[in-house]
Length: 121
Image 1 (cartoon, rainbow, N blue to C red):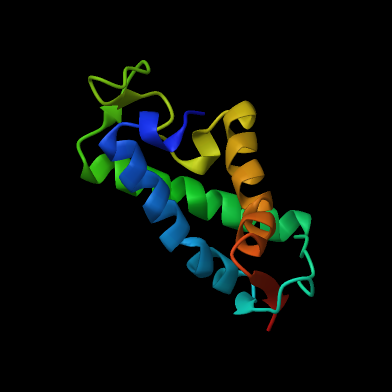
Image 2 (cartoon, rainbow, N blue to C red):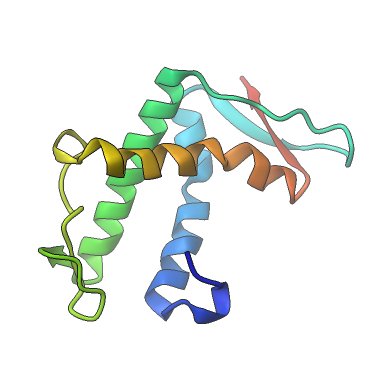
């Protein structure tokens, strides 16, 4: 992880695209967000199935985003835009899947910082 100011422009754009996709992932598992008064936000937690579905979606989003800007499969090399993780969820190592799951689990806390909560439709 790096500070925002230290990120390469492509990685800043990637982070913004990840945020843009949050509601899509939530909708896929029957969840949504709403603005809530400060101090009244309830932190949601996701079931194992919800987490897995959204993590797989996040990996798919990440793959598409990387491929669209010219990344290819290969040993990790940021300057050459190569990543060993440009594979399907089924082919992704469990250790790497954990990154996507952790990203998904952080959604309620990140939204809380901006006055939103996750709720079940």
